[in-house]
Image (cartoon, rainbow, N blue to C red; front, side, top):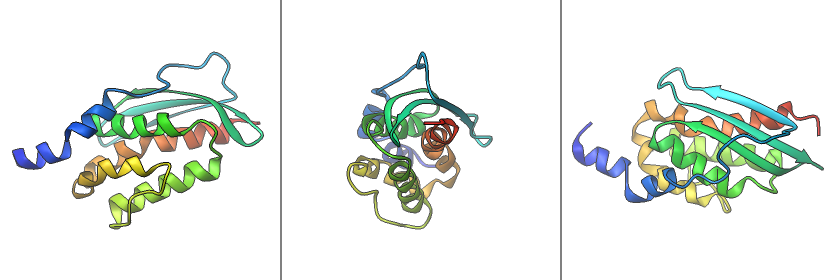
Amino acid sequence: MSDSDLMQLYSRRILALASDIPHLGKLGNPTGSAHRRSPQCGSSVTAHVVMQDGRIVDFSQEVRACALGQASAGVLGRTALGRSRDEIARARDELQAMLKTDGPAPAAPFDELETLLPAREFPNRHASILLAWEALLGAIDASPA
């Protein structure tokens, strides 16, 4: 990977998203939690949710990931509250398609994920980028509400 490739991959916008992740930490009484780890890079995310009437009413995440994984978690943290499982799954699927099959950037309100488009060329980073979304879906699935 050349220096210019690294500069493009870790743009100012990605680093800004990575340094400002909303809803960090652990919820006191989640209805569901899930931990996901990428065996490729060692990144990990634990997500906690409170679900009510099929919607996320409270959410937190513990993120230990590279800047790309943190940036993805930052977008998730800005958009998760009030969303249904289907909305989160659709955003994850659109993000995965953007990265792996040259699909378009996810639709609003998840369109800020377009910032991660340069990572398309680095398949070994895709798992870390998807980690927070997978953890949140696991937490939703673990929630009885």
